[in-house]
Image 1 (cartoon, one colour):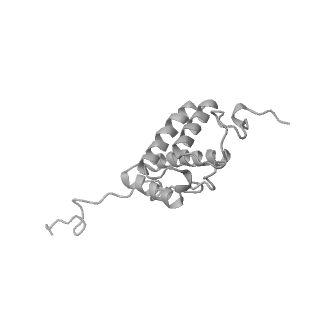
Image 2 (cartoon, helix red, strand yellow):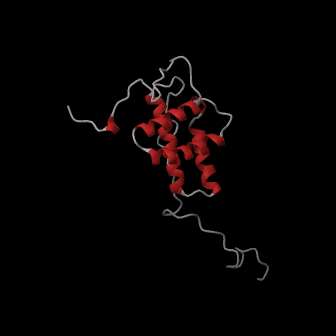
Image 3 (cartoon, rainbow, N blue to C red):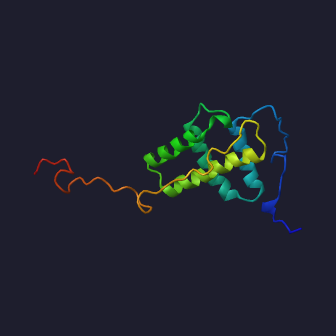
Amino acid sequence: MKNRTPFEKNIGQRTPSRIPLDPDTPLPIREWQQRYERYLDLIGRKETRRRYARAIERFLRKYPDKIYGHQFLRPVINDYVQFRLAEGASVSTVRLEMSAIRGLFQFALDMNAPDVMVNPAKNVKVKAVGRGKAPMPVIRNGAAGLSGDSNG
């Protein structure tokens, strides 16, 4: 049997708070968020927890009407990615946020959350536009016909 590092420790059915889960009662996603952040603290990932906490909080604030994990389906995740990119967030920022969201749902699955059957963020890709660069800006004072100028 190989030696395990602290990061490979299997915590089994226990949650980081050591509160047993009732298999018939779904927990709000905010409860899973707290447990996930505590788990990241327990395994020594404090900086990761801080970044992920901000990302998950931003994601959950966008959907205040969704209380439970089963309400977050793939279209919601895709909508969030498009929203963040349209808002001007960089591709790398959105990828970090997706990693945090993916981790939250995977944690809930691993802890046998009764209302989370799949990880809706799994395999969601954030694609860069044209070799990792932002779209080209509109030319304001450039070629005729593109700028809207009536100069000719």
